[in-house]
Image 1 (cartoon, rainbow, N blue to C red):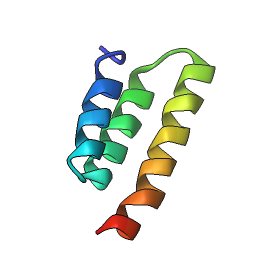
Image 2: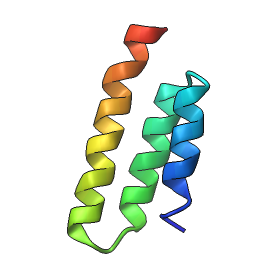
Image 3: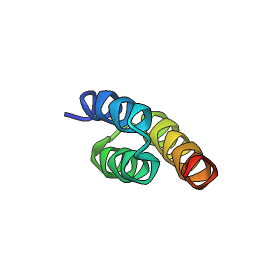
Image 4: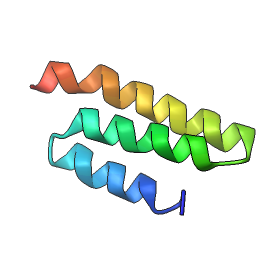
Length: 56
């Protein structure tokens, strides 16, 4: 399941729904048992969170 969520985050980002993309990435990170994958998802969530107010 965690491998599906990055695709959803990409779609949400393209739709300009950056906050929702960040939430999905954080949710996916909670499900991933591998530490470096979890860190990667959290980095993407932070980037999405930092992006969305600038484009609103």
